[in-house]
Each structure stands twice: as C-alpha cells, then as structure tokens.
Image 1 (tube, rainbow, N blue to C red):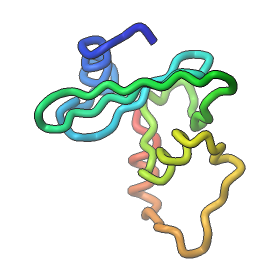
Image 2 (image 1 turned 90 degrees about the vertical axis):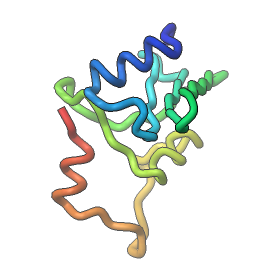
Image 3 (image 1 turned 30 degrees about the vertical axis):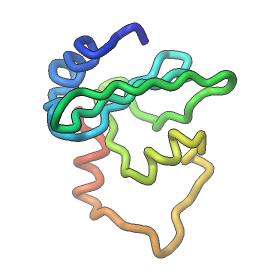
Length: 110
C-alpha cells in the first residue's frame, strides 16, 4: 500500500481500464487486508482516503485470479467498511434486486 495519488490513478486507468474521473469509488487493499485505500474524483480533484485496522482484517469478496475488478453495490461497500462479512449476511426479501445479466456483467469484469 505504498502507492499514492499518481500510482493509484495509474492503476485505475491502466490496470483496471477505467476512467478515474468517472466519479466511481475505487478500493485497493494490501495482501494482509488490514489496510484500505479509496480513490474517487469529485469533479475538482482526486481524493485518496486510507484506513488501517489495529487488529483483524477487512472482508473481501471472493474472485478467481483472472478477475481484475469486482463491483460492489453501495450497501456492500458500507458493510465492507463497517467490518461486516457478507458471507455471513443475507439480504431480506424486500432488498433491491439487480437483474441477472446486469449483475453478472458488473460483478465479474475481466
């Protein structure tokens, strides 16, 4: 987690193939998953926010090694930042549903 503004900007653009100025929040973690960096462009500049846990680690969605990025809903992002393991959580019947094709396309983008 040594990368800062320019390094993270380059990762978003070159490795993920995304536009950093899109307004999306990009999250990076270290191998031990006890540190996170969030990168977002707010229209006037790039924000880089970091969090280091004193103990424990962040839950991280499972993905195979060929997947370059994982898309989370804003609810999943909130739970991840709050330390909730989504494997243990389950949505209620009334939760917001994404269509299957849309969900598959967003979640596993190689």
